Structures are given as C-alpha cells and as structure tokens.
Length: 417
Picture (cartoon, rainbow, N blue to C red):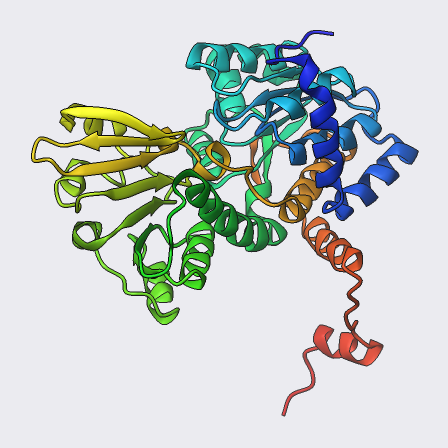
C-alpha cells in the first residue's frame, strides 16, 4: 500500500486517540454500523483532502466500512496529527499522504498522490484538491460523480469557479448545512480557537481587549467564548447586517483601524486576504498578539510584517515575536495558520461528529443519485434534519412531533383569524 507519513511506529498511540475521539462521535458510529451492513459505497474511490486528525480518522473508517477505496491527504501543512496518520496506515490499511509541517512542495505532491487513484468522489477542506484537479488534472473530472466542501473559504473559491463557468462537476456545500455551521463553526471554532491561543501563549483572557475580525458563524463563536472567559470583545465587519447583529449581541463594533490602536489580541476569521495589514501593524500597541482562525494563512499580511520587522525570534512553540524599527513588538501565533489546529487539536470530536455525518451521508446521496450538472448544491434538507435527529438521540434527548391536526393546519391555507 502506498503512503507517505512521518513514522509508522506512532500508530499505537494513534489507535488509542482515534478510539477516544469515537466516544464523542456517536452519530458517525451509527452511520458506520449501517454502512458496514449495507456497503453503499462498494467500489467507490474517494479522495479526501482534510485535516488528518483523530476525528477525520473516524470518518475515514466510516467510508472503509461502507466499501469505499479511500486515499487521504492533508488540507493544512500544520494540522496533521502524525500518530493518527500512522494508525490509519498501519492498523486500518488506509493510504495517507500527510506529514506535520510538510513544505509546500510536499503538500501538493501529497494532493496529487491522493488523486492518483482517479476518484469518483472528492472531499475537500479549503478547495485545494478541487483546485488542483481544475488547474493541473482536468482529465480526472470526467470520472468524478461529485464532491463535498467543508469550509467557508472553500465554498467562496468554488462559487468563484462556478460563476466563471470553470467548475467541472457538482459539489455539495457541507459547510452551509445548519447542522454544520450552527455547531461546528460556532461552538467548534469558538472553543478550539480559544484553546489554541491559550495553549500557545498561556495568557489570561480576563480583562484583555480581543478584536474579532469577522462576525460570521466562526466569529460569533470566538466572540462568545472570549467574552465567557472575561475578555472585552470588539468586532470588526464589512457586512452591515452582521455588524448590526454584533451590536445587538452587545459588542462594540468599529473599523479595524480604530480597533488596532486598542486591541491586545487580534483574531481573523473572515475568509479574505490581508485583513490585518501594514496600516494596522503601525497602529498596534507593543506586545499585540495576532492569530488566524480562517482557513488560509493570508488573512494576516505576514510577508509585509516580515519586511517591516528589524528582528524576529521564536519565543516558544507557535509564538514568533517581530520587533519593529520603533521597538514595538508584534506577536504572531502559529505562523498565521489555523491556530486551533496548529497549536491545539482542532474542533472537539462531538461537533465534528455532525459535520462528518453530513459528509458521509452526502457522499452516499451522490453515489445513489448519480452525477448532476456542475454547480454548488446545498445539503439536502432531509440529511441535515437527520443529522440533528441522530445527534439528539445520541444525547438521550427526545422532542415533540406534530399531531395530525397540526400538520394539516400547516399544510392548509383556508383557516385564518
């Protein structure tokens, strides 16, 4: 079996951690049990570019049980958990191409290795896999039934491709399922971002001025968790309704240029480029901490920060200090990459349970339904609701259902006041 991982001897530790994560992934366990019985993906080749973590490993085992031929590569050079990768290869026989801290050349070599099986289905987290197909290996698209996308950033890229008429096959935007963004983005990103910054720095959050750049679902989650730790949260936004929501949620909202003067910690979650730039670095106080929890390491203009600095040193793992000519120091965490995965373990397993349940069920849906026209498609409502239902059931929670009278009322138009 082909693979490229750091060290197969790490597999024993990886097996235990994968088992531990599975304790919190009860929805995925139910799907895995059904897939093992029904084999809905028998003979289907799946190439997946995801964060290689213990949670992703549990998703991989669902596909394996379902009969799929799976190849995995990393969607971020810093997010791979080498023991989980080793376990997938050595214990479960799943090809993995991922090494923590791999360079850019190796990163794309691994993407191409995962594509070499000529997949029927693609899974992506940021659209690098899809982008590679469309830029370099378009011949593969004729064999592809469809794909899924896990992130906001990836959906932005894919919609740009679709608008330009370049997208060659259909993709389901898993990121936009209610059971994904309500929980994964808000509670998962919220908690894991705070966790990553805390692990990297050991700071006290209480009393800090925390600037959250972007008030989408991820920004909402980070703001909520930072406030819960006692921080004074400031929100910056470009979208009027999101900014208004932040105001009504009780946060001061202002332009980044104003927030730059007073912030202690800056967290970017916008999905855009150069959100923190030269003009902002010039305004920041000595010791300002910068972290990114958006998918790509472009939200903080690191090349400009490198050029501005007269000195740079690493203070501790994932913590780089840049000294500017006037003596002020700016601290960059995790090399500007996803801080929750660079310095911590990513989302808690219980929220990835729902996100990955959507992935598994959407892949089954595409395989059964056959190829649709190229485009970006929503997660079918019945899948979204089923994931929520299964999650509640796994928590031992029951809810009401409509009576026949209530159902009839909702379906009629005759009755009024």
